[in-house]
Length: 493
Image 1 (cartoon, rainbow, N blue to C red):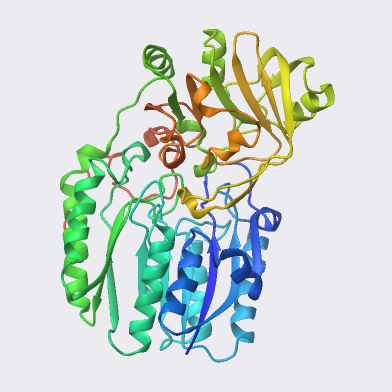
Image 2: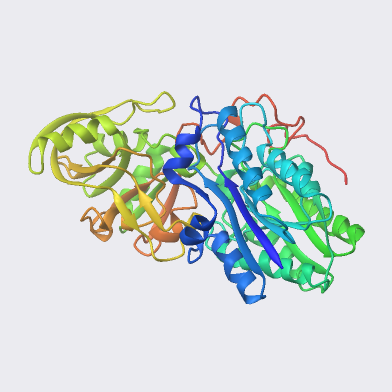
């Protein structure tokens, strides 16, 4: 039996002015046919799990199409049309298939399709017909829609944040496909959608308030009738009608049981909704606290979270550290102009820069100071271990490391880079353990790598398009009433 593999992944921040075009996918991943196998078969990504699980079950994996771009603004309609067109064309060319394993993100939006994942999964379903099983993985930051549920036979979300179990979930999806095609099970699923959003600060799956919710979902999977249970934390930076947290349960030929159990998971979340508002630590408080703790300390810049689409050049924390002359501090800024100036000056030279704060969605303004150029690098590195996002190969473009006399070290990159790997620093001859303070532009994702070095983490309520306090954002499409925006919101199953 032959199982096709397709993927279209991007997390779309609708509050950004920029758009994600085809070039952003080409820069990251845009593969067709056997190139998908070559790139992903050994990866920590769920697509790698697809290949492993199908091989284990004796089914033929037919790699068709895979596209992925870093989190950024909504996908342009032109790019979405081209990507979906390529995918459907590759499905058509594949000949007879017995099933499809699909990898959407769950929080992709295009200019005219806020629920872009539901859009392309529905298009895929229409192309292959209603009887062919489609089993999909999803990021737990998915804004799950009923259209996604209806277009697939089963959806399985990662169970960790930071996301370090992607390959395992891909294997799980492939094993479920094997059982489905062997007529051992008949997946039936249901989703539940309480009107609430979880603050990004509260989305650590290993700790309360999330952990008890995940433990309840784990207990459900002990029931032999339950094939899978998934919790969607939601992506609050996607202003869509689907934005919010949800629960999904897949059962063996028992849709009523799936509905009841999904509702129970959702009701448990709703009852504890007040726990998910978050605690907001100001920049001032965070910097003072970091100075009092034993280093290295990681300051997580939540408002400029590159993994949530932010520009990666906001300088709020860099400015605060510079003004206080906090020595032994590290910050990475995406600033191609300053990188070029530093590289032109050369290693060892002194150069005055206006670093960061240049993009339209940035905050803090440029950091003006005199720096010594420490070194210049190609910005390419590899991560061998399982890290958030399943990434293995990284390219942040030409990069320069510069340092002030007071000891503030900046890494200037020519491309945005999510801080998922310590190789980002070591590939540029920096020892992470030598710093007292490391700023990572993320919330939970960097922790998988940074916890090997940092003794403590402080999540900082910085401003920006990924602000932790989502009540500051100007939503136009979200559901109303919705918690925590309307604290008196009511919901009954």
